[in-house]
Image 1 (cartoon, rainbow, N blue to C red):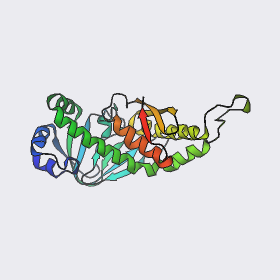
Image 2 (image 1 turned 180 degrees about the vertical axis):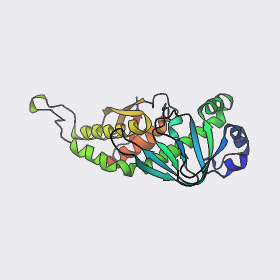
Image 3 (image 1 turned 45 degrees about the vertical axis):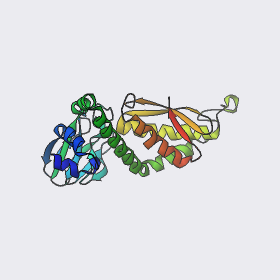
Image 4 (image 1 turned 90 degrees about the vertical axis):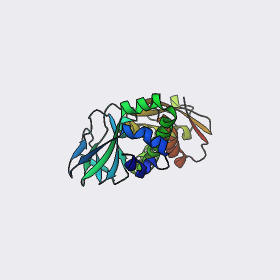
Length: 244
């Protein structure tokens, strides 16, 4: 097991001492081509590290056919719902080829935090970075949706407003609210969390993280890796995004 962990990209540069601590947490599973590793809606308990083979990630909307979101190859990580605070997996994972995975489950991660806090901090930091990269790659998939949301909500009057009750919010604030609405819908759909507008002073945007993001150890990655990264693509003049 130690040798497999040493070669896995997510754990690159971990010391031998740290790898020896976390090695007992992991166990190996193998699957045949076409096997379903877990189904969307199943209880989310474990995180999976793909050491060989390829898998497809599928999502089924409640009112439509299943959609293939992504294909992961050797070195990929999936089952993020288990560490993002979700109670169920938000997608299904199906083997394209015969696969081998390393599996770590939530109770072991909790025990690691209690028994080896320094090593746990290293693991959580590495997971946070991986989540941030994953969301960054997903931005292209929702960019058109975000653009549409901004375009449809730029009126300073707001939806349903009339000149008799014109709000005092600026067009930029309305655009930010529209962008956050789209981001929140995506985060809720795939991760069970939410993000809401709180205030904007021209330089700092304050938001509220809710749902599965509350108390989640990866919420800083949600805030700075996904929310702030996307917001600053559209509003580069924003210098800070903070959570309240």
